[in-house]
Structures are given as C-alpha cells and as structure tokens.
Amino acid sequence: MNIKSSLIEFSKTLAGIYDNFEQSQQNPKDFARIKIYFRPLPWHIFDGPGFYSEQCYDYAPWDPYRQGIHRLSMDKDIFVMTNYGISNSKRLAGAGLNPSLINDIQKNKLQSRCGCSMHFKMKKAGHYIGMVEPGKNCLVPRDGMITYLVSEVEVDQNSWISRDRGFDPETDKQIWGSEHGLLRFKRVESLSTFIQDNWNQDLI
Image 1 (cartoon, helix red, strand yellow):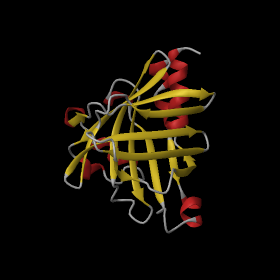
Image 2 (cartoon, helix red, strand yellow; image 1 turned 180 degrees about the vertical axis):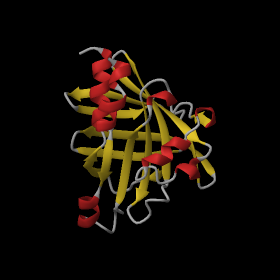
Image 3 (cartoon, helix red, strand yellow; image 1 turned 180 degrees about the horizontal axis):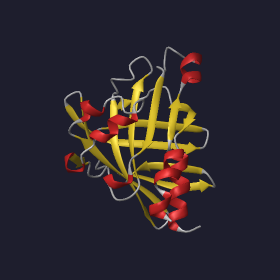
Image 4 (cartoon, one colour; image 1 turned 30 degrees about the horizontal axis):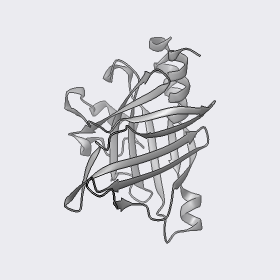
C-alpha cells in the first residue's frame, strides 16, 4: 500500500463520533459519559489532510473541555498527528455537532504544540495504536504545576480506547488522569464520507 492509500485508510478509521455510553452506564461512579468528535478538515487549511477534534461531556456539547486541530502526515511507517492549539477556541466550540463552525478556523491563529504530536502505527489492517511522541516534552499545566503528558490511543472502525495522564517531570509521579483505567468508546457515526468527497482528488 502506498503512502496516499495508507493516509486515506487511516483517516477514514479516525473520522467519526465516539461515545462511551456503555462504560458510563455500567460504572457511572467512575466514568462520566463523554463524546469524542474527530471531524475531517477542509483540505485548504493545511493543503493536506487534517482534523478538528472535540471532547465534551454528553450533557454539554457546546462546552467542550478539549479541542484540537491536527495535521496528518506520514514518516516511514508512522502516522504523525501534529497538534495545534486554537486561539479562537470559543468560536469553534460545538463544531463537532455543527461542522459549519469549522469555517472559522484561521490558519494564522493556530499554535503548534511542540512535543505533543501523536505517533500512530498500524497494528493490523484497520487497527492502529498511538502514543504521544517520545521525550516527555508535551507539557501541560495542571493545579499550579507543570506536568508532562502521556497519551495512549487504540482505534479501529468500531472503537476508540484511550487514556491521558500527567506526570511530574522531576519524579515521574502521576499527578492527574484516570485512576480507574482506560476510557472505552464505541463509534456511533462515521464521518469518512467527507474524506471521499473532498480529499481523494488531492491525494490520488
């Protein structure tokens, strides 16, 4: 499989809406109900493949607690998801549900998050494992101190499994993150049609 085909296949796997409804119902004390949106971006934003992501509690879809812009590239057999912060994040809040808000993305207002790229590798066809790039350089302030992020993701056509944790750079002690294990989501809607309509003409 060539690079273009690999990027298309990986992108179609990512593009979707994910919900941990079952996990939250089975164990509501430890797991809130969360939705993840991974929506393909118009090609012109990066002149290449990219995504907008949101994570929000099910009861607050217009108030996401995490937003991101991601540029996708490939380095040998590694899918590199370069992460960007958003200076006008409030204008984009809710774009997971309402994709027309994505039109407010301005490339010159994106802020590269150094050390925070996600690196994915294919475990088997249609199944990918990702983690934050090596080096402990993705720094996240939390409760008045600086921590480094350890992020793990496993994704296929049906599910998204993830865990984010923050550690003390001096002691490597965990400071924040799930104490109850992995978050387990099911894909409730595919958003891959956009890729077929808007990306193929440029990638192939």
